[in-house]
Image (cartoon, rainbow, N blue to C red; front, side, top):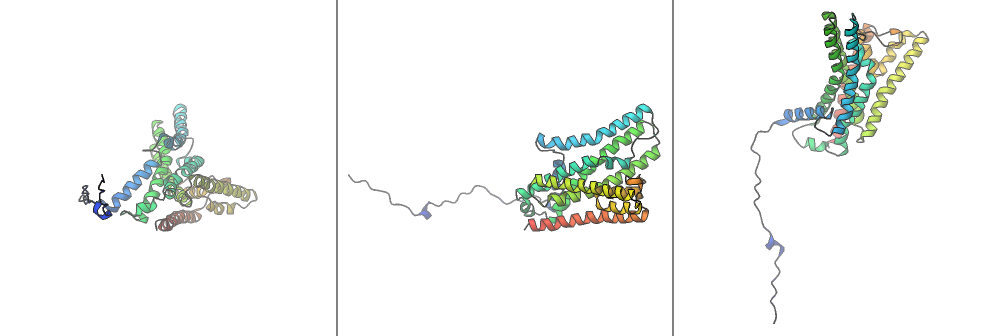
Amino acid sequence: MAVEQPMPTAPGDQTRIHNIGYRNYDGPRLGRSYATRSLYSQSLRGAYGLGRSIKSKVLPMLLFVVMCVPAAIMVAVAVATKAKDLPVDYTRYAIIMQAVISLYVASQAPQSVSRDLRFKTVPLYFSRPIETADYVRAKFAALASALFVLTAAPLIVLYVGALLAKLDFADQTEGFGQGLVSVALLSLLFAGIGLVIASVTPRRGFGIAAVIAVLTISYGAVSTLQAIADAQGSSSAVPWIGLFSPVTLIDGVQSAFLGASSAFPGAVGPTHAEGVVYVLVVLGLIAAAYGLLLRRYKKVGL
């Protein structure tokens, strides 16, 4: 007995349209400013590993503790010995701890931008209301804020300890304010340099090595040249050599305008006229770093 086969149906006859409930979004649109603030807050949290794995928290938190412990020890000694002044000026503390600060920048600047480059997520940011300048400002401000927290926290420890030790309130307040101005400039300068270097490569390891090399090698080379110039009797050249390292730039600014003692060989800091050049160079480097980041991310976002 023959069995009748069903006639094959054309592909178009099997097409179905299903209403699965997609609707247009009718709620409030928060816009660029909200997106920029969100990117800033998330980047700032990420700089200390907040909201990430425990492994990501270890290094930034360890460096934060390393920055604060010497300040706490100094305060304990000052209170115990009833000293008339702190062992270290507020403006000197960041210069002494510059190796720890450089390591923090080297570890967190690539974390802030290299992953976006490696996973090619930058164009996704720009597909939303956020623009290139918003992205750069958020990243720059986040890393600068993280650095300011790192460098200002030990100054707060020193200040509170000085008040507990009943040191002169006016002198300590003035020194504390000068120290905050100094670390604010340092935070902006180091954040700009770190982000520019890290934005060149999507590989985090290369970014870390490059940032460490730029910050530490430049400081070592400049300090060596200053020592040679001072030994040969060319002390007038010492302040000008200091223009070629981020650490010595901050040292020169604070010794010229913030009443700090200079770490230059022979304690020959820049004069007020030379200090103006230092300030202009620092501000110029910060502006240049911002401009380079804008150019870089305009190309990446295409």
